Image 1: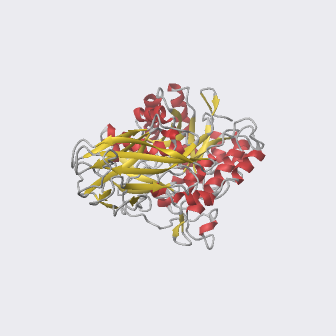
Image 2: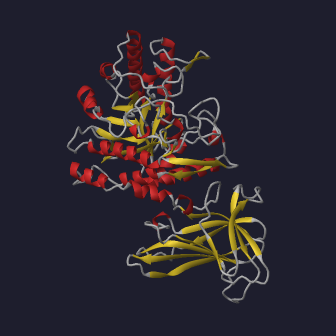
Image 3: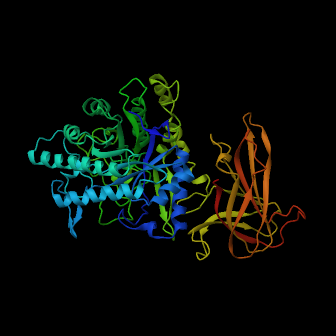
Length: 564
């Protein structure tokens, strides 16, 4: 009833992950047909956020082995490789079949080939955690399209549906056997919708290792752990669960609601791991999902619109219902992060919601550590403050990295002798593809030390965490070559006492061209202080210390901490 990875107990603190920019759909090739540097830029941005959140595994489809390994070796994040296993139809002899018949010999042949190809492709891939077959295929036996519909009623006794379901689970088991002939070192799981047809799973799926399930029941999974233990004697893993961030009753985004349900789900998961006093068969799960799916409401149009249509109802999420029959599940709003605009390279920025910061606290707990029991878990979760998580979101546009893109607030304030600063449209997209940049106008007669500053001293957490790296970069376009750019940080110790500031200087090489400057603070780190101020001084002349004789406009972009 435990997942063991390299000899250690491993709780899956997982996340459903994909990379689908606004304006496209899940079947579009997106970044995956672009150059490796673009793919790495996307992975680096997202995996850094996931690692910071405490996520140790992602669930995804069709990720090339080299990227599975890249994510694992650079960020320590494993991948659960998923295949749909005919959930959305199959191509058989060149013909598309929208509803898979799992009893059909031709369909089974295609599915077994898919399973063998999966194992042969990934069996020796560093970073592979386990294989998963399907995605709530039992629901698709009743659904009429690829879009999410109302969940089929538990325990349907329809004879034809039961026969189709039995064929599905037998095919699941046959595919599991095929995988294990090739790869004996990675577990195999299925992905069932809730506990529907659990009796057939018991009878037919005798060779799977883990019962995986997509389950949306509200704040708790209720009897799921006990039923899987009693009927299957098997570990349970939640392949999907969570809450959307849109309140259908109030017709607005509701981050606290989303955080409430997600934290409650994870409490349930942790309380049922082996060694804790409940069922002892929980091995973790994958929160659904990392970023909003703008394509999901109508999968033929509106890919660039964040639709607010609730498409099905679920009484477990009563915080956004007036009556239980009201549709309240908003498929395009399940992201733990909101999704920003797409840039010229097909990339986008994510904006963490309150659930991100709340789940970051959740994933700091290892339920397998000595001394962790039911009381400890209860106390731990009771101390997770959702309001604090929501307040942290308000700083989201004013924290590293500063990219100044659409919707971003200007976190900086200019100082001394009339110097001004504002976010403007980038006048030169050829050398820097960012649509928005920061403009600093060092007007005539400005002080030699005029610049701009971000002061975050009121925040509860430090702006800069040197555990992430000691180097900072920014892009700059200067009208003058040879000028000095000073990058300064300031901090306070636990008693609130100020520390003399640290600074690093760099020189602009060329005029009127975008270039990236690196400021290395490796020798200027004092871990006893928290750093909450950044000041930047274009044309800092502390040698002559005289006011500037002519004005100059500097363009600044992408101020960020370099991850090491």
